[in-house]
Length: 328
Image (cartoon, rainbow, N blue to C red; front, side, top):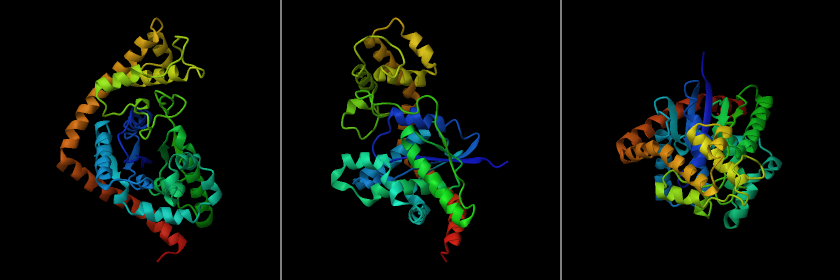
């Protein structure tokens, strides 16, 4: 029986953080036994913000090295750069002709990013969800591991696929989302009402995978809590709940077990213990990343082989789409 297909990706802008790890990559590594998995470094998406070329290339390699370090075996998963498969951009243009302006106007991420980047509200930022739809549909994807903030984009991909299929027949698989039950959304340490983001101006909001142990501990010690000194998981305690989620994810203990672990602890000890748990959990991955990023020949080989494989996997879909719409 042929395996179903999973596709997901991360941008090549800056360091990965523990939200990327706990909300996405950690779950990806568990899925390759059951699915055919493609994990992309979405460097074309990164161009919606002005990039230094050398830094973008360096960041893209860093993300790919982190993919492998976090447990994605390149022999079992296709790990590649989006820009190395031109079909992403070609399909994005075709699908943009089947996507309505009103649908794109409703995308909340466009509104959020436009507010933060008023000097460069470009067309790519507006049509970003169409490229994301192309990324997914290009490989006849069955399952898309996404965080809560990407649900809207996945729904757009589903709508566009269904619209295209209604016109031309069953060209695309209509993908489903995979939302991990715990750790799907790690929040900012200083502002637990918003998601952790590597683009956050406040560096204390984000724990990067490349942060030193001392920096990680320092950031957790400064994490926002509240004034009642009670450790419990509740909507009215976003800071504490976020720290409990992180602790639960890195230790493998349930939320209830995590709460019990700190029944007699104050906030200071609690935050320190969460930081120490993250440092300990990250240590083997950091060592593997350092080894991989130094092995230029190995990474170059992975990149070249994966690009060829991804192009091969994309070719049948593009052939069907071109025929369907009437391209010679």
